[in-house]
Image (cartoon, rainbow, N blue to C red; front, top):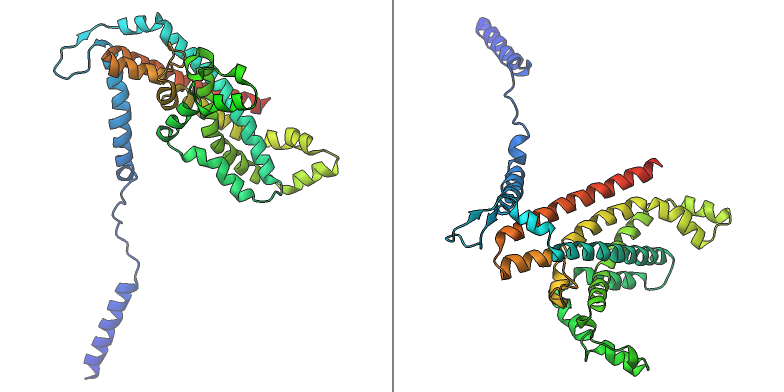
Length: 315
């Protein structure tokens, strides 16, 4: 009996020791990161890069866009036509002017609003909401309102007449210069809220001790903003400049909905010209060539802004 008991105890100890002993076998290899990025990779390659490549292929065709319609390969003829097209160069000029004016105005207004909101004023949360609301409004809902405001018989001319400035009234959307001014005004009104929010967040990261030290040294509000706050918000300004370049190149909704890219191509942008060429004129090959040019300009503009930022940081 004692022998049987000792045998059972020894067997139990052996099982416990086997359970507690570390495993010496090789672990099964854990899956790599590739399965996790495959959906995003398929999306980028399948929808973005493939679309860019297909657009480049279409840009070498003379095609009206219908699948059953025959297409003819014309090589680089669409690009040759594009470089000699005054409307194309006019759209690029409008884009450059549009970017300079809107970016400057949004930066100045957004920076000033952010500085004011950081001061202790009453009802600051309400003002923040009022400033940011235009950013979340769809252009399709704003465009009819602005068309009515700046119409020849609109409320803006009515206000000018009411305050004794009737001599300044004019059909704002029918003039080459004034139509572009209206488009830029609408864009500034819409996107200044985003600029304000980003500058406000950047100013929130500045240590209060730095501002207190500036005040102790006798720096006033303007001096503090210019010499301390603005340099520390330079990264935000550069990011906004990059977004502004790309946004200006992609501009479509406001000029199309407010002015129909007119009058006489006065508010024509690359986006509206691509739409007109592709949808209205059914010249898909030429529209694809302009799209490739738009892509190259967007990449070049982003790289240029990044280089300017690095140069300013190294100076």
